[in-house]
Image 1 (cartoon, rainbow, N blue to C red):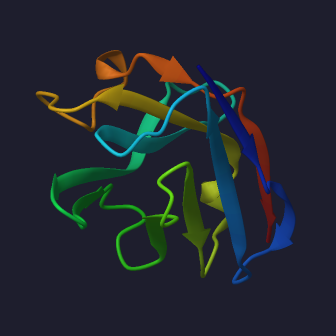
Image 2 (image 1 turned 180 degrees about the vertical axis):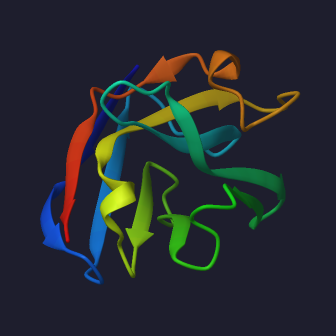
Length: 127
């Protein structure tokens, strides 16, 4: 099982980026998919998670710092998860990681819950 993150880059404050995380090896329909980030000198922190509730209904969690600016979603084939990032701020600068774990999970905001991790993609927001 592999997760491949992409879409990072350099953007000015107020701009947008869309990150993608492609899953290979299996479909992730019944998996919790999430994004975390790690800034230099800081611990890895939760950004957003997407959990299947039933059928095609998914529940999303967001960190307070990104609520209303970031949107997590999946494609219809459930093999790619996206993170649309709008109104970016310099404090959003970090390496962004996608992660996955088979549902259910106790707390989707905790990094230790996740079994699979992508390699990370750098997001830099200039002021």
